[in-house]
Image: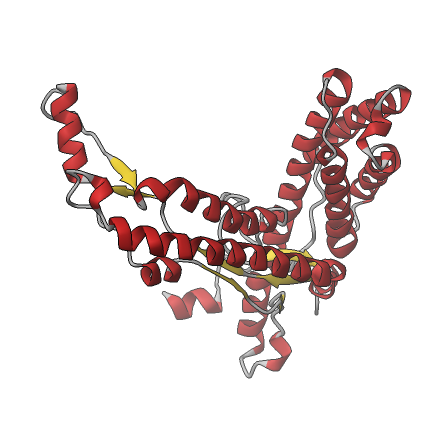
Length: 319
């Protein structure tokens, strides 16, 4: 028998995996470390690690290129990874994307990828000239660090946006297994997936809480308000509504999303936060944080099938 919460999530979300490769702007140098130890008169046994700019005097320019690739990762971090509690919200892996937002996310990622690739393409001719003119002479006595060739440098960068995938739902009825064994495997899979979805919900709520605290402080005390305060609040409202409607239909989370949209997102432009409207938004943020604390203290427990812990067919086969 299928779980309606899991079924709803499977129809409401897709999983998206993006891999980002980039060069390290710094390289370790044992020669530089030994020179530093000698120059600083460190006692024997005191460790020291020295790193030098990987591209010599163009290392700062390299960091500017890397920043464009980092924007792709930062964008993906807006969405929780489908992982178990304790793995961390920024663990690498598949990100949970509401189905309705998938076209927008893919379009945004394609644009960010293009910007990153353009920044690299613009930098490489300058690096080619630098490499040919200077080679590794700018490293002075640091003989264990060499400039990469332009081709080697380019090969260190890349963004791979994989095709969105459905949430893996286990259908025991389609497997030719003994009924008891199939049911047990299905129950374990269901429990694990439910825990991952609950963890994603927790991450979404916690990240919204942190931003709302910032909104309250800035709208109350801030001298220079940023448009991102409203734009990011709108994103959190979408995320809260998406995880509730797409998973457990928690009415408290839906009410929280409505509060953010009605009192904060509705400001539109940050200039509208001046005066009484900003005060209303600050109070709304404060009330939202209080609501989140209440939600966290009394989470909804999604029902799952009972897992056999005693005489288990699966345990007997594995042991």
